[in-house]
Image 1 (cartoon, one colour):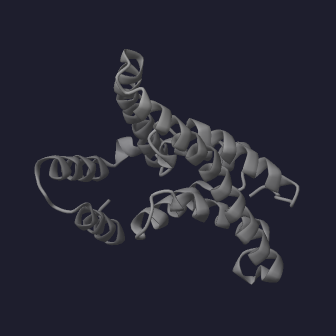
Image 2 (spheres, rainbow, N blue to C red):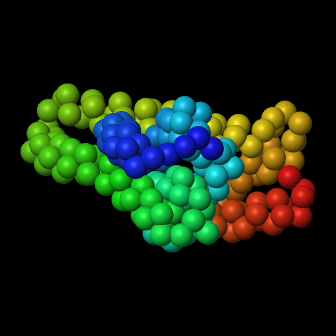
Length: 197
């Protein structure tokens, strides 16, 4: 992991502000650029820390955006020396968590509030209807990119047919049945723990 100093806090905040304005379809759609920034460019997190942060936050109850808080927390905690780093680690973790969450929430929430009011007042215009229709493929593409980044961070999948089969089975079950997604996540966790995938 590369070094992180208090001065880097502004850079972390600024990057999440920019991502906030690009988060069409939610913060999860900006995961590819978060990965590029936090893992590849700055090396503040490893691939496994990044993926584990998202998995942990997604498994926990609450809003989807909580993964950003976990990412920020892990950046600060790692920079401060981990759980045994004392007050420095805990304060850096808290500051990074707040910087990333405020950065991702404030601009998009403000823009959404005003754009939604304007869009509702002008919903009869053809341009507004066309804009809403064009957003669906963009959101789907961003979600596919997110899935791809999280998938390739675990290594070469061409040698793991069990993972492909498990993924295909989960997709089909979500699509064709009413089984809750948490059951499928549990099956995947058990399969991984037993070493089947």
